[in-house]
Amino acid sequence: MYAIKQRAFGGPEVLEFTEAEQPVPGPDDVLVRVRAASVNPADWKIRTGGAALPVDLPFIPGFDLAGVVERIGDRVSRFRPGDDVFGMPTPFTGTYAQYVRAPAADLALKPAGLDHNQAAALSSVGLTAWQALVGIARIQPGQRVLIHAAAGGIGHIAIQIAKAFGAHVIGTARTANHGFLRDLGADELVDYTLDDFAAAVRNVDIVLDNIGHEYGVRSLATLAPGGHLVSTIWDHPGVTAEDVARAKARFDTVQVAPSAPDLKELGKLVEQGRIRVHVADVLPLRDAAEGHRRSESGRVRGKLVLVP
Ligand SMILES: NC(=O)c1ccc[n+]([C@@H]2O[C@H](COP(=O)([O-])OP(=O)(O)OC[C@H]3O[C@@H](n4cnc5c(N)ncnc54)[C@H](OP(=O)(O)O)[C@@H]3O)[C@@H](O)[C@H]2O)c1
Image 1 (cartoon, rainbow, N blue to C red):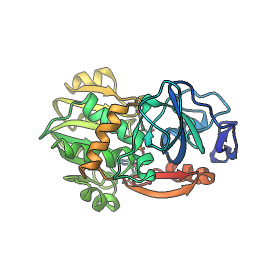
Image 2: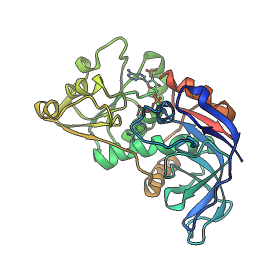
Image 3: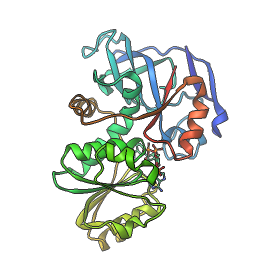
Image 4: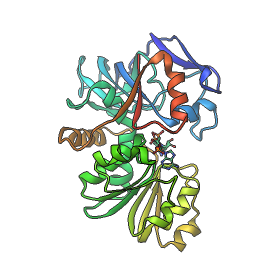
């Protein structure tokens, strides 16, 4: 099969389009013929060798996929060959390829309302947004929710999950993205290049911080007493225990985990028309390096998708 392989850590040029061994599914696995994988910031953080997630060389990058089940392991009963599936399979690598060996427990049937590109794009950011807002923050109707990097992969799905739960949603994004985000349901938007969100936003029940670093401590200022800061930037959330105590806030980080039940919940929202997935561009797999360059610019609206 063809795949993108990394034999060294470094810049986008270390992503090599090459032949690789087709993986063999174990008894609890399926072999998926990949129709689409998506680019995640974690891919280029891992690519440089500087990520907190350790990966041994050589490896095939890529967190999430959508595709067609080609073969099933002896103990797999949830899927049959020919099923369209999506998800973020353990071990968080390997989807920049024509075929992937995936634990059946990590995948779900692709919602009929999404094509493969959109389903691949939804997988890991959808799981992250769901696990942060629903699993950790236990979002409730009427709550005020602030979402940073609202126009990004996680952000644009998080807005829609929060709206589906009846929240009032505030997002940070450049003005160029405000129309896009209003269409997805955002109630208020702050252009962080023009206004200080920490001064402009108050009385928030949940902050979903997808930026971290100095955004962490500034976000505490927006919270109502007892409000909850949830950071996806678990390695650099930008807050200390003292900061959190002083703000009388709650604080958690999220580390996304594979979950077929959570994928099914996301699929339900898709089928109800409550989640739309924005694919900014679709690139051939051999152009993964270009995908990384664009993602690293921090300017992608929604998601970039790679097609083998
Ligand atoms: N903890 C976990 O399990 C987990 C899982 C997935 C991802 N992550 C991490 O979460 C972060 C976000 O991931 P993502 O996939 O959503 O990223 P992304 O799609 O690359 O985010 C791009 C968006 O960020 C916005 N942006 C850039 N700088 C901003 C700023 N200073 N303030 C507000 N918005 C800004 C841009 O919109 P504008 O042009 O409007 O600025 C752009 O649309 C990454 O660091 C990623 O590694 C963590």
